Amino acid sequence: MSASSPHLAPVISISHGGGPMPILGDPSHAAIVKSLRTRVPEILKLGTPEQPQAIVLVTAHWSTKVPTISCSEKHELLYDYYGFPDEAYALKYDAPGSKEVAGLVEGVLKERGLESKMDDRRGWDHGVFIPMMLINPSANIPIIQLSVLSSESPSTHFALGRALSSLRAQNIAIVGSGFASLHNLRAMFSGQTRMPSFKALNEEWSRQVTDAVQTADLSERAGKFEGWRKWQGAYEMHPRGGAEHFLPLVVCAGAGGEGRAKAYADEFAGLNMWSYYWD
Image (cartoon, rainbow, N blue to C red; front, side, top):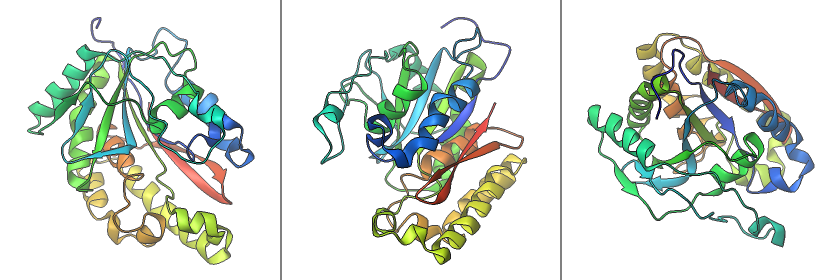
């Protein structure tokens, strides 16, 4: 890695959509796809002298007992979705990994007293390659995949983010890949999300999420996320035992440091899917 950059690399928690559908041209993903192709590259400063030297990507689709870091130089793709056309299983994304950056991730976690382990065998899941195919199709920036924890502990995920935040000064961006505004497949497939009562509950839920994310004081922000399961609508948006699509945002909230996050929303299933970032 080259010398530290004078600026801090950005942190962004994205809404990554459903399975491979953003790549397959599903009309319901049009707004999300547009943001992944335009907004996110701009936030990451892709194509400029300040684009990240590497990206640490926290994926909702890898849950482990301890934080686990991908450390291969090259990764196979895990087509961890079912029932889609053949083209969904022939997708390619050949961005490199980086053992060096994986080591940096391990180091900053250790400095914070966080146990972690390396994994040089696991491929990239669709929480990595689907959004990155849209964000950076040139695949020229190394990616280090980081798991979320099966414990779903908000304090530990926030602490992970605090540890990762120190990498930003080395121009390493932090990306959380999930679906923080909603990940309730039963509600989505049943059409419940289009009912006025559910929409109102989702709006209140998103108001609470945005309030926490945009809390400027870091310790106060941490306290709000510690109690996120008590927010109105928490279990309707992320059913019990199914917080994995919310947890990348908690990591990003820790990595963002002091100051208010910025936000944007993409329409999906009749609802606003929010993404949050610090740049």
